[in-house]
Image (tube, rainbow, N blue to C red; front, side, top):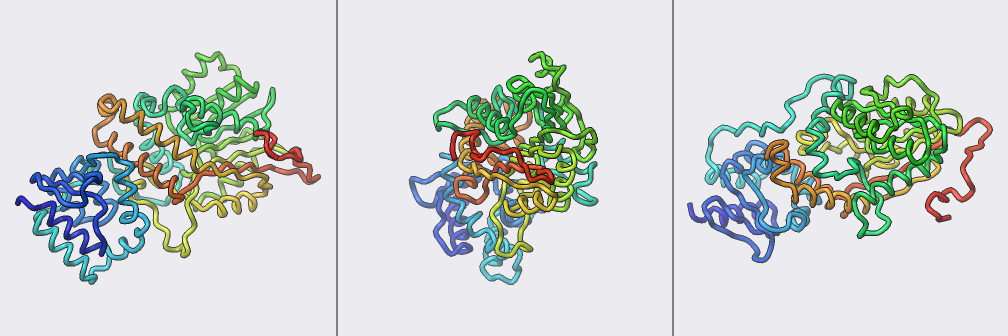
Length: 433
């Protein structure tokens, strides 16, 4: 078969009703599609069988993780060109993929059968999370999900994140700042929003590798508790804290945030953790953090948000991310998060969107991963490294296109007197009125 690329291009365009935006190179050496664009390389016809058995994003993701498809050219450009096929038309494509009677889908399936063969479906790559059972967001299931995501190996994460070991959106004072400076500036911005001072008790929920508690203790003199469900993160954080000489000011616990009972705290930071909480537990999360604060205490909730759907009942969790990256992770619209915090008793005083900052952060992480590719593969697996490259690059495009955002929400446990103890110039932490 010396014309596989042409046949695949024709099938794709008949299904989509539009020209394919990228060029295809098939396993037989044939090429087809618009010249001068990134090339979608299909290395093995097994990728077609994955699409036959699981049409849409998950089938493509499995082929990518298995190394059966790749991109020759700039990955961001390729994802940007494919966004109109995979994302902006996502609802239409999903409906079509499950509408067995759709004549275009049936014709495409017959074409793929002829090219890809009728062998049984290939098993999913080993990096995929297997079928999960039981209720969402129990303590046991959450701990398993966190372990899948974070216990990949501290050395692997260090390749991507750099010396700061901060795995959340940085804050870029200037686009040409270093990643390390931007992460430090983010941590300091959070400390200023929380109005931390010498002797305050700080709880960092989902403390990761300890960057926030270390910065707050070293620069602001707080007594800090960091909680995480990842044993690898906890080991790394405790070692860093000892090296900084801060063991008398910081404690790291492997503990679920629902089990924290030693309040009250003056301040709570939750940076990139609430995405793991889940809709069924979000009110419990807000009420728990509210109960742990002193009257007048502040919460800084730093969280990714999705755009609201016109029909919220139609919202579906991204299959690739759920199977390979964040098992059981869920994104909520900003308004729903603010509402849950207010219903728990918080007074929401400030919301800052830093969506573009996350796109920059992700591009830096991808660049670091690509620059250290062989070592990343050695420290994990080829499939795991491919998961992270695709995940982070696709997320960068999503932030840039406003498909998702990230917000810092400052909320106060305002006492009955109504004195929030915030200045009249609320945003004095960054010099703006």
